[in-house]
Image 1 (tube, rainbow, N blue to C red):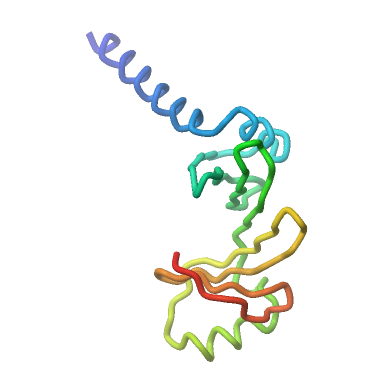
Image 2 (image 1 turned 45 degrees about the vertical axis):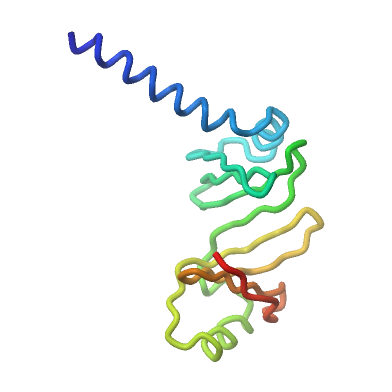
Length: 139
């Protein structure tokens, strides 16, 4: 009897997983697999007409955003605060006193432009590759 119950439960989980992956077009899944072989903990999410894929690779938490045709728009890699450009933390500490940092990341767009992000509760603060403040965006 337990086997009869377990089998449908496993089947249901497989269907849910397949639906999560099927949200992305085949071109997106194929481009991602080619660019990030060996990625684990892969999760697809539709975002403003594009597809954000969160994953782990070589012990790093990452994400990649693709358009519907499989074109890579940007990648984001979690980094430690001490890996931010030198000018970032003095600016952050002066303008965001007492604000806790949730996460820090390095973002590279499809043209090779690097930006850095400090994520706080409800906000993302963006800096250029030299650590110059760019903008604040809602999380």
